[in-house]
Length: 331
Image 1 (tube, rainbow, N blue to C red):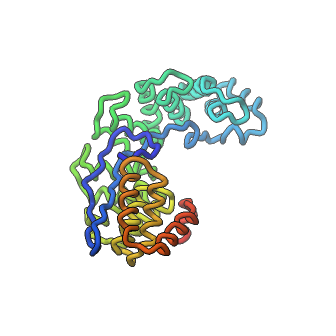
Image 2: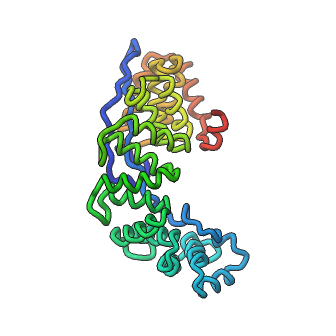
Image 3: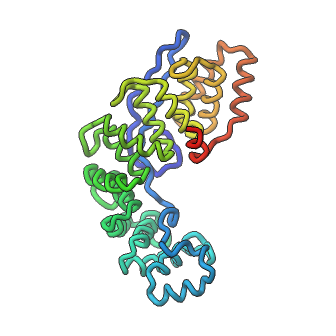
């Protein structure tokens, strides 16, 4: 598994995808198929219809509404305390207000309260309680709670591990357009966890997430095209998806893109571009990606001129990551 700051607890790194068309070396590609993280930062997605506290012209007026039992105001006030917007950050106070709204059936507050228990913010960490509140929100159709509940089942946190149940909740969220759920549902089909292995279904869900800018899904979709799994093998299409993830700074995709340039697969062979991308991958990664990037960089550089190496270094220095909004404008 490649450490990338996610909260993934499981997921396999699949069989290597060898690329052996180069006349001078065989450069192995990485397949990075690991579970997407649980949503763990309160208030990123759980925004009440009334809006964030920072948007309220009068905090005390909001508090008065919350104290009168207005669930939307209670959730918004909880958001404010969770983020320290308009009031000092105070997770315990955030939990207090989330709970009041959650007990009235507010799905956003139920989701946020679940996050508090999952993270141990404002309350002792308690996965069982997190599952309880996620479920209440999920049963109201709250997509982010459905995703988190699926994650808890997939990882056996607060409930016995149950891939089939995880898939059930991922699917409900994925069908509402949640990109993380789409990615994880694709992964389950890819790995054959909770469902029979089905590369065509994996590609379907990876593509949905990839088209929303999810770099992990873009990488995995590239791997599928690279290997001809569920689709005819198509190096140019693999390069397209690697490039989109690589431009967002995803190290495993940067490595794979470097491999494609080194071997001239899907793109004209270009050693400067190859070294550029593996340099970037090495700089942005740890573990397997870092080690393979360093080895590949050394292997490619052995037969390059100083001018070619200097050009690759220049390209790497000048490269800047792009946002998905920037990238999709050029598609």
